[in-house]
Image (cartoon, rainbow, N blue to C red; front, top):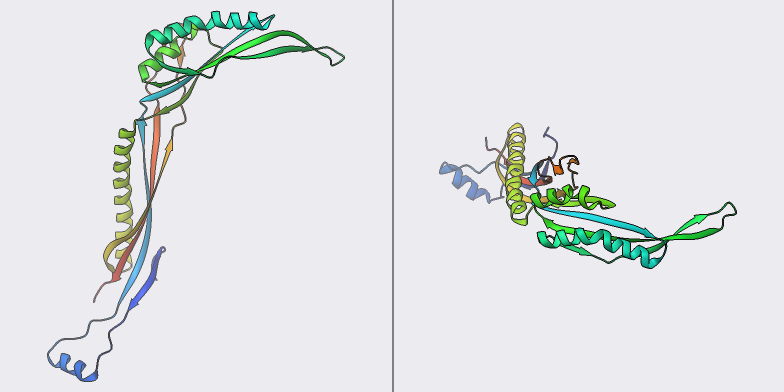
Length: 243
């Protein structure tokens, strides 16, 4: 019985020849070939590797309250101007969709709400940061005191990912080939060759937060990593070995 994932796909039979031709060949010492069977073998393999991130994206959110809309907006402007000046001096890539303004309400026991103040807010997104720039921004928290400072994403360069992907495909193919050779040997099959390959690549760039040492105003951590994995399905063709 053949191993799992091995199935017959085509049967090649002896060619029927005229009786006289058969006798002639046998008389010359030439025998007809034994029938052979083409068999399909399917193997699967995967390989993965962590890639050091080269690009970081950070969100910095600021909020301020005031009794009036103008006051809230003015307080927010004062609060973010130092941060904006610092980012500009550092030549960081930053963008924003603009400030937002909303009312702050209090509810009385009779369920009637009263407008008590206004809140102005703005979100900045800093992107294409290298690791040192990322560390610098995270360490700025005690100085500029944003309402939120969060790592949004990390990623490796396209060149690095392309190189790693080639390596992973080679690794997965070798594993798939070793499986096919072992299965063919157990089933007495020969002449193994690739019929079809299906490859799928998955990237996990979920950010891994860094530890911030507030007392020393510095980040003590290594670079984040992005995981890449390759899944490979290989269909092989083999034939029954001649006896």
